[in-house]
Length: 192
Length: 296
Figure 1 (cartoon, rainbow over the protein chains, first blue to last red):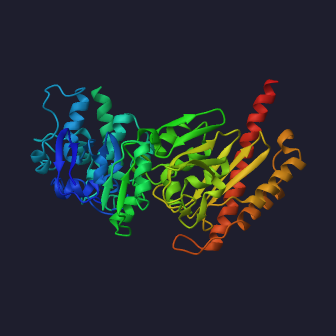
Figure 2 (cartoon, chains in turn orange, red):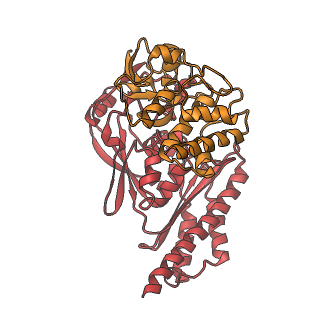
Figure 3 (cartoon, each protein chain N blue to C red):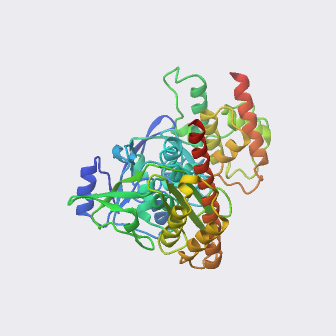
């Protein structure tokens, strides 16, 4: 079957989709967006977290056919999504992340400082706080943490833990991830 | 596999009548796991997300009509006052991502003895509204669970809503697992005080082939509370009464040994949760009594 939906602000079409296929599979294998990671395939690990009509969900548990006509934001579109949010909408009328740019997205520039590339504040904070080790869980954590900061700009540690409780990381022990989210929240507060 | 996309409830009923083997999918948090792992290859998958009515709820005089697809997150955020037991249970479901998609209709459809909503529904008192092209009926929650992952639905029926009695007293929910998030209950316990009828209702999860009520324990406690005038005098529950209640709750279990825990552990833990939730709810009841009496 064919599925038409919006990915990172741009309309996309996926063809030859099997009826039992997950949104995650469509994103990775049909649209070539490998940012959302495939690990447990049962909603345990959160590494496939995307926004579906703004709500964080495990894309491995959404049937492809269910996203027909709906809006998905993946980690590849997070920088643009955060930018639009900060600017109060799309000023130029040409926002979103094209499929090609999303497919080639990487944190270019200085990989340690993130300089020379456009990153969302949460992505920059993860780099600055050293919250990335192997990086496999990072995309899901970024999407989940970004959504929490949108809802709750001044989270307590308990709020952060609760919001990230569906994302497993087997490298960091979570402390640096907590640091990164606190850092992003503090920067967000300064900017206002 | 065929993907069915009914745009309305009537279309969904017609599709289910035509294809009784069609598997309804709403949040997908159970169904997609089975498909991802190749445990299930339904001939038809029927998406219910397009039916807006299923994600709505309505607070009535006596009960809340909760659409089958209302996500747990919504229950936690909006129905804490009306359905405190279910709101607490919802909070223990998996993770935010799962609670954003999953709902009580799916829990009932799957009818796993470990489903988190069941003890709360049993304790509060509820009816499941199911419908087919033949008509609509309401199944009392006590008659809904018929076996391990089996329920009272006919092949052509779909779950439309669940009518949960609004709380008329304190309710509690307790669940045993290895961590706070992402846990399938080792066992769970729900308790609701119903001061208006001077009764207590319970619900036990993951400790029998189906979710069950501890009826003998309820009867014992109802009689003990009545006899001691507890509902009126608001005294602390006698420890011996609490212990007997806990023992009877343990005795209502019919658990198995599995990877999550042994049968004897489950029996023991249910007793502990029964005693604790009784203490919590009763203290809360006494507190509200004191407040209202203090004003008089």
